Image 1 (spheres, rainbow, N blue to C red):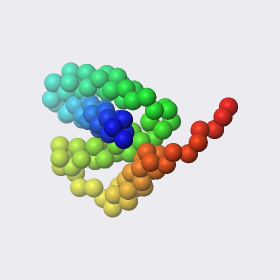
Image 2 (cartoon, rainbow, N blue to C red; image 1 turned 45 degrees about the vertical axis):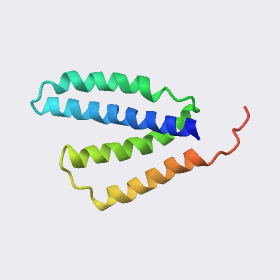
Image 3 (cartoon, rainbow, N blue to C red; image 1 turned 180 degrees about the vertical axis):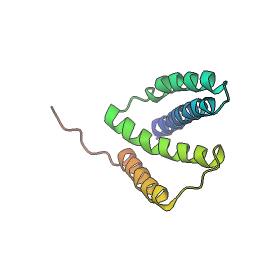
Length: 112
C-alpha cells in the first residue's frame, strides 16, 4: 500500500512537471520569455521523476496518462481559465477509469 501511495505521489509530481513545462513553453510563445527557461527545465525533470517508480512500463504509463489528464485539465482551468466541455469531462472519466483499473487490477503477467 505504501509503495502505491509513493508511486501515485511521484506520478502527480511528474504530471505537474510535464504539464507545467508545457504551459511554460506556451506562455513563452505568448510573450513571456521566462517560459522558455522554466518550461524545458520542468520537462527534463519530468523525465527523471516519471521513471522513478519500479512498475512495469506499460502499467506505469497507463496510470500516468490518467494522472496527467487530471493535472493538465486542472491547469487548463486555473492557469488558462478554460471551461471544460462535456466531451472532455466524459472522455476524462473514461481515462481515469482506465488508470484505476491498471492500478488495482493485478492480473497475472503473461509469460514469454
